[in-house]
Length: 270
Image (cartoon, rainbow, N blue to C red; front, side, top):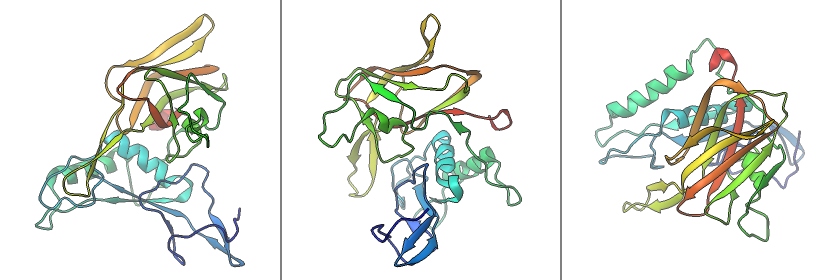
């Protein structure tokens, strides 16, 4: 697949396409036509191990991201033969803090990374670009917050509701099973006093996930804890349904979701 010279390379020529801190889409193209020449350019995803989106922490220790989020970002970043760079910040002495190192080590163990083995993969995404409907959508002339943004395979687009309580339905193939759901929530961003660091504050406070059964909707997940940066829900058994509903019961601001992925994980990697 090629695109013409209208594609803008942030750094060209380069071995990778670099758009720090943007995450690549699930439908990434690798071959690009630039001035009549074809180039193979994978994407380099750069993330910070710090939860505060800060690449340095010289004097003040900062919390690390949750392992669930780091695992999902790893899968997202390395899919389609792309790569991930995880910034692990030293303190003012040049050393890596113990708890930060432990997070990086724990991620490697969870993923079972090995020099002699291929990179682990996520499961099969059965919800990508499936038809979606929402009870409300934030009004925008350019349709930037459409329901279809919730499963378009992009972490830089999002569905946003106009009401504090809202729901969204995704139509699925009833023959395809799933046993995992991941949710990336859009959150309020607050800048810290150092002029660089940021923290995110969740909007959604209570939500549920329902599936359509013969006699109506059945709730398979209910939580009164904030979703946060990335919520990973793993089910003990698989489900099949023609429709899945994401219900927001309580929120501090109109709820918004970057991506809700319905996934079938092979038993060997669950």
